[in-house]
Image 1: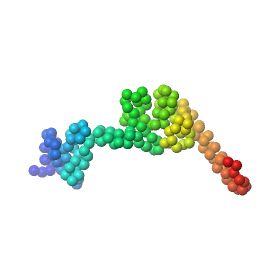
Image 2: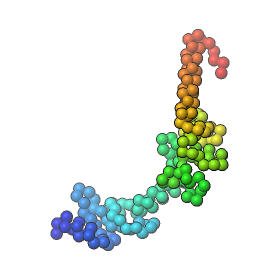
Image 3: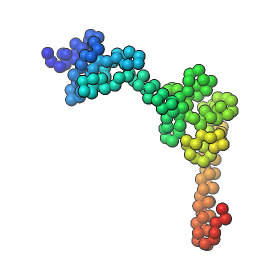
Length: 172
């Protein structure tokens, strides 16, 4: 029996647990059940056994619960929030919310609007202490504050350069 005929027979009928599906230039796939929810699916093999013991959904939730429901992306800390939580509507489709937005919302005792921007004063994205956060009513206000910060930084650098040239001691 040819491989393509064998593949079509396996795919047309419901395979039994442990059935192998030959794949060209790859390890064969195996029909296996998720250890958590029991969902049956094709998965890669490793040494004749299923490479993954969990389906995508269970594997994803196990990974994120193992980290305490927290992860970092682009420097920001994201927190997994329970669907029963009153701040859940601020979460993304995976149930995560940026920690700095959650801290500010809890401080204000209200949900933040999507256009409101929470800014890190010291520009360290994972420093989510309340005293380091400020709330802007929109991106234009936030942008103006960033430009002012950049202007002050540039003036401080120029001031240091002038002091160095004049060989004056720094006062602060």
